[in-house]
Length: 203
Length: 203
Image 1 (tube, each protein chain N blue to C red):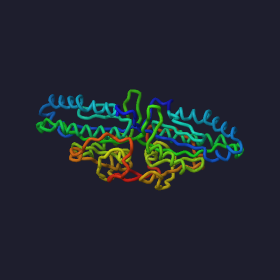
Image 2: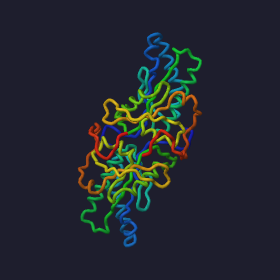
Image 3: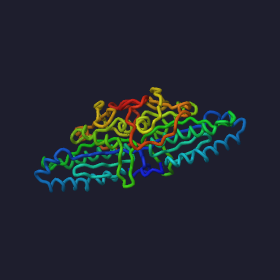
Image 4: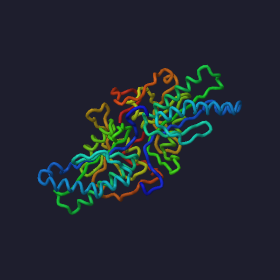
C-alpha cells in the first residue's frame, strides 16, 4: 500500500556463501582469503550481477544477498557465477580456491525504505543455499517453474524438505558442479523452449 | 540482459473482463453501457489500482490488463474491485449492472520499450479469467502460494485444467461472488498468517 512505509514486490533472491573453505582458510591465511574473495566479487561477481540487472542487498563475511527483478536473470547469473569461479579455480592451489553454494527463491518480498529486504521468500533462499551442492545451485519449485521454458539447464528434482521456521516443506531442485562444467552458457531465449524438461513438475 | 531491447521482470498480472452483459447491453444501449463502464473505471477501478501500485497496461472495449509489482497487492486489489462493483450494483437495474470476471497470474514477463507486456504469464492470466465465476476471481497456483499466508481469502481448489497453447495444465483456484460479498476487506499483513489455509497445496 502507498500509505505503508514498506513496499512489496515480486523478486528473485540469490543467497550465496563461500562455504567451502572460508572458515578453514581464514584460520591459515585470513588476509589472503578475504582479498581473494573481494577480488572475485569485484572482477567477476559484481559485473555479472550488473549485466543481469541484480542489486546487491548485503554482503556478509563470506556471503551475499542479491535481488533480481527476474527469475530467468537470477538463474542465468548464478550459473555464470559458478562457471566463472570454476574457470578461475582451474590451476589454483586447493586452499586458494573460492567455491560457492547458491540458493535461489522467488516471491513477494517486503522492502524497507533503506533497501533492505524481508519475508519468508528471503529466508527460504538462505535455506536453499544449504541444499546446494558445493559449487552448485539449489532453487525452489517456484523458480523452476519460471525458468524451465527459457533456460536449458536440467535441474534435478530432490523432492520436498522440511525447513526450520516454515509450516510447509520446500521443494528443492539442484544443478551440480559437473553439470555446470559441461554447460555451454546460453542467454535466455525470448521465445519459450516448448518441450517440457525433466525435473520440474507441472502446475 | 541490458544489451537486449526487452526487459524481463517478475510481475502479477490481472486480466479482467466485463463479460456478463457487455455484448448484450451494447446492443440495447451502446452509449449508456460504455459510459457506465468508463465511470466505474474512473471512480473505482483506477483509484484502487493506484493504491495498490498497479499499472494499467491496456484497456479493451470491456477488458483491462493491469500489471502489479506484488501478488499480494494484485489479489487485494482484485477483491476490492469485485467488492466495490457489487456495492455499486446494489439497487441498480439488472441491465445496468457492471459485473467482472478477473484472472490473476504471476511470472517472468517481457516488457517492451513502449511498456507493453508479453509472455506465457500474460496469456495464462487471460485464460484464468475464463475460469473465474461471474463476479469472482481465478488465480494460478503460483499466485495462491504467494498470497495464502498474507491474505485471509479462502480460494477454492478447482484442480488442473489444460489450456490452449500451453504444454502444461494450469492449476486453478477461485473465489466466488458469495465469498467476496461476505468478506471484511482486510489489508495484507506484514507478518504472515501462520496457519496453512485450505485450498492451496504445499510446495
